[in-house]
Amino acid sequence: MTLEHLVRAAGQRLQELWPERKVRVDKIPKDADGSFFLGVIDSDHDGELDRRFRRSARFEVCYFLQSEDNLDYLAWAETMYDSFRVLEVNDGDRIRRVKLINRKARQDSDQRYYQFLFDVESVLWETVTSGEVMEKLEQREEIST
Image (cartoon, rainbow, N blue to C red):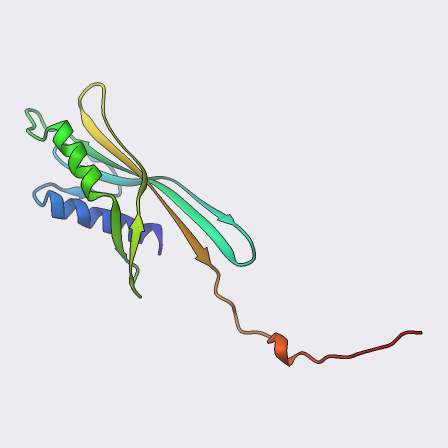
């Protein structure tokens, strides 16, 4: 499961909730009013014991207000909290349910956009490459005097 898979899943969820609004993921154009921007703020990949790794990423969803926009902040925040608890991520081989943590919603002080933040943490195991199997190792016993 990659960051791209997570961004696609979040973008699909936004399209399901607000099909009439565009979701942008690469950059924010000048005519972004009335659309969403979805991006990765930060990501981290740390090794743990043996072949285990922990990956975490922080995402942001920004909604850019149109003049006289009727999308109320409180209703928007409630919809985001309710709809972004868990994401179903299709990584090609299977569909994974990913729990979203540290969810926060806030409104820009200039009332130009709404922002929703969430984190994803996952634990990964590195695949074992084929090599010498322990049970086939030759054993020798030596007595030293």
